[in-house]
Amino acid sequence: MSSPTALPRTLINGKSCDSLSISDRGLAYGHGLFETIRLSQGRPVLWEQHMERLQKGCERLAIDVPAQLASSLMKDVTQLCGLEKEGVIKIIITAGSGGRGYAAPEVTNTQRIVSLFSLPVYPSDRSEGVKVISCQYQLPLNPRMAGMKHLNRLDQVLARAEWQGTTIAEGIVCDLSGKVVEGTMSNVFAVKEGVLLTPELSQAGVQGIMRDFVLENAAAMGLESREVSLGVDEFKDADELFLTNSVIGLWPITQWDDLCFDKGPETQIIQARINRLLTEGV
Amino acid sequence: MSSPTALPRTLINGKSCDSLSISDRGLAYGHGLFETIRLSQGRPVLWEQHMERLQKGCERLAIDVPAQLASSLMKDVTQLCGLEKEGVIKIIITAGSGGRGYAAPEVTNTQRIVSLFSLPVYPSDRSEGVKVISCQYQLPLNPRMAGMKHLNRLDQVLARAEWQGTTIAEGIVCDLSGKVVEGTMSNVFAVKEGVLLTPELSQAGVQGIMRDFVLENAAAMGLESREVSLGVDEFKDADELFLTNSVIGLWPITQWDDLCFDKGPETQIIQARINRLLTEGV
Image (cartoon, rainbow over all chains, first blue to last red; front, side):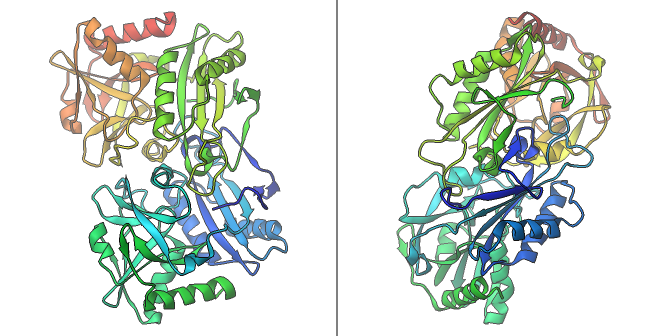
């Protein structure tokens, strides 16, 4: 996601700093959340949506949200980005230090970490189509954690370790009941008989901001949409398939394991809509 | 667990330091492991067992183990502890920085973090008996992660948030299938009709070092032992109940929700054995 060679610049609680106390609950327990936001034309894309997800995640993890968190974060972003037009903003919010063991202090010492990275460099033809594989790793079912972009991401680390190199762009992960959930770093969509399908995420997975954008805009694009619970073979039995996330936008899936697909017409319409968002910010 | 007021002293890779790069995979994804070790009479108790669990965890999380990791850690411990006789040593191993997104670098930049804390201060009568509650939070089933003491500990944080104060000493957590797994920071045992029972941990839970010690020593103490998969009511239907971990040793359970228990004879034998370990190191 981030290139270690280029920019990385970080503010912690508004001050230039690139290290965190080892007693922070973000490190000790993963007691925190993150957002990865596309910077385009100097603007953080879908900022309000990212802030809303962050706020909801803090509530679910009992992390106190300081007054004006979103506006403090926007100040951080403005300070970090300067005249940069393109990049990736990563925000980490942790419950901070304090407390004994797993018990959090009554009011968490919430930490605000904002970093700026260069746009990741992917093969340029990925907007025309990518190859994905089905991962062996299965996500646990966990309704209390589902949907959140929290810092407990060993599931994704273990799934992502199943392939190397750049020929395979993404791995698709099922849950322990065998239902397709998401990609390791993306959400996955199918188009079947004119209906847009994507896995429901009440038991596992991350509710991506770009996923929400696609679902919200589907109707306006003339597409019925539906959240589904399907196995790999059922999900693959589609006319079109694609991946989304906030940084890559949309990648059509043109190969899933041994099965090939065309970049379909609905995919192209949605891709054009996302590209407009990423270039014009609307 | 740790008191922020007293000692805390930390070495990172053998050097005095108390902060970690925000790009570390331990913070970003919880890609790491920890051990909490009792320092008694100047010796880290059950050191080899802690090192063995750490090594196995690194293998399961594809974290490269530097040559001589255990002896480097022992040097760190010696340097940190100095003349201290009693305390808690916390070791964190992370996969370090590097790599893009969830994909780890081919060889991880493994980080070694060792901290010394004062012994936690608990009410002194806990060795005579404690009150525990059944937590509402249910642990996900996840065979790939079960048993490990990794840094993804939101399950424990959310379960531990179910009570405040010191009247309740621990919360007992079931998995999503309703089977008893463990306490939030301890393992749980029952004695029923002369047999020692503890939950099997193939789907969830942390395989505690003190749990292993008790199981290994049960036969020598004249006790048959068995790993079981039981619901709360079945598990509670016991003659004796107790909790163990590496720092507290053993706490008898004298109340679980509304049900009361005596500190039983087998519990006393095992507690005496653990106390000998914690005071004499053998």
